[in-house]
Length: 314
Ligand SMILES: [Cu+2]
Image 1 (tube, rainbow, N blue to C red):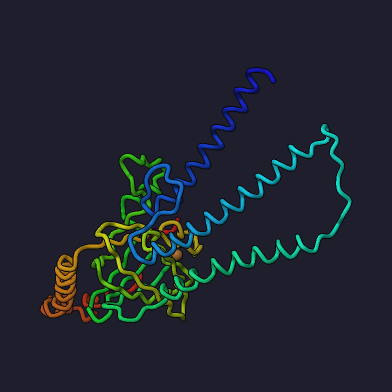
Image 2: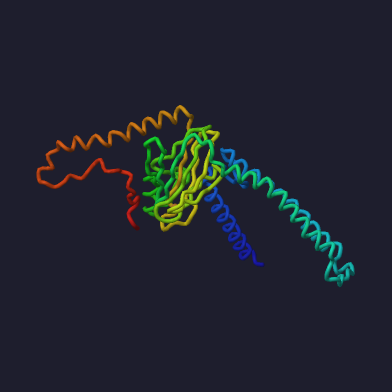
């Protein structure tokens, strides 16, 4: 190989590795991992930890099996090589071996399935929740409704990300670390509180996914799915829609802000207070002179919860 072509090959190889690392980093970004993190994150909920434990058990089982199989292959290739005069055996069936390579994997699978099933059952147990949030997926935003609290709002891609994505500029990770992962209204939740989610969609199937919480749940029109979380650590946890839902699927991020119970109570009270004055302008407007032409003024008290297109169509 000529030095120049070797150089080209090395360059192509380096580009391929960088591209793979780049896409891995982009995928992992939603869980706010550290740079070059290879393993799944532990998350900030018990559910996430259970998923992590199941993943680690499966990983180590795979590692041990891989080591045994590759060691056996390497030994066979080296010890029974042609140059040593090895002659291939001619048998085609071995009942003992066939029983062993069926029974051993079955035992491994059963041993892995028992704890995994217990974990799954725990993940779906939404009983004794202290509060419920209804999540509705729309093309292309989320609506959060704190059931029984008179608080609901839409959560859309933040304006800066939206501007950048439409400008054709290349966002700099240093100045925009949460490009496409920021929203205008965060889902604020209290820590150490069992929160039940009821999840649905208005138009097409979406999927609500925040990796740090440890699960994802489909949001399907006409169907209510459930989930729950109990966040142990205050912080900001980011996620994305995980079901291809249309052209702006990649632009409906999720941001959960976990705060202390006191901060949450204060935030909720403030949201409730902010929601109330929306009814006041109706009476103010009644005195406004623009009803003189006989046309009905637009009703400012109209429910602002109607979905509106977040972005102009491209
Ligand atoms: Cu979606």
